[in-house]
Length: 165
Image 1 (cartoon, rainbow, N blue to C red):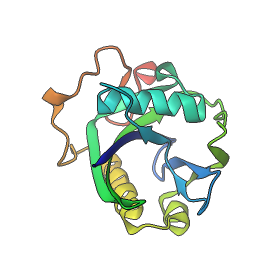
Image 2: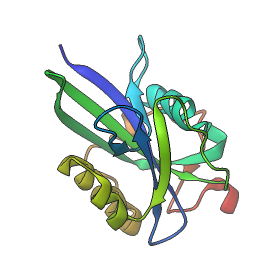
Image 3: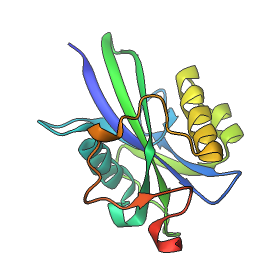
């Protein structure tokens, strides 16, 4: 049986962007963006929003989605296939995250700093794709806008949130 999870790459600032990473509270204490398993009939996007709030305290009004980015990773975890879908959003305030019991620390890091913390090369690939996307504002290859319902969620466009326009 395959496991499915979703999360959000939260970023702030302008180039060079800073990305939120959270350190797991369990071995091997890896660093990653907030993410978690889908519950019930949740969509990837619904699960990502819920997990970000549970793990960081950030609610949809605290960030604005970049609707042209979606990245999917597949790997084995604990002997099972796992798929994780990541979206991307810009933090629109300066409130620090509130850690859940699942994490022991957080950092806002540059692309280079993040890549030094990652254990898996797929995380490096994910963050390189996110950084390129922000620099060029080109939709990611896995993003099919018709599949995503952002109707109730703030959207960032061209690196600017609604509040900045």
